[in-house]
Image (cartoon, rainbow, N blue to C red; front, side):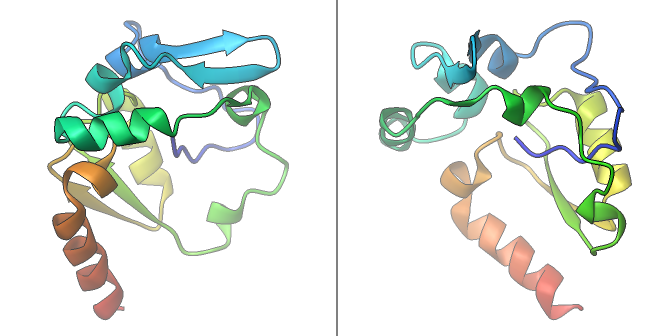
Amino acid sequence: MAVMQDPGEPLDLGETPTPGMRAIRFTGEEISIDPDISTVGFYNRCKPEDAAWAIAHLRPMPAATLTMNASSSVAWRSVPSTYVVCTDDQVLSPAMRRATATNASASLKIDSDHSSFLSRPTELVGLLSSSISSV
């Protein structure tokens, strides 16, 4: 999950948890994704075999990844950044996607789920290639 926020700025998860957020499990010092419901949130447009492959590779990560405040110096304030807005993302709320796109130097849109690298890889490469070649 990619968000770009200022230090101390809370994450706007929206009033109703997204399907993807409902799949995230906080267990003490770790966060994991519930494999039984992850497809709806993270891989809703992927081929079943691609979703199954991704689910088999899910691993816990430190809870601090999502819960710690940004440092006093955030790179996206000084380094050019591009945010790819996945229009059918079932993890990040529309408000969170809008806020992140606003904070980035540039934003691109792709009609995909949260995992565009699996569900729309050719389109994602084309979008990124076009963006790079226009710089």
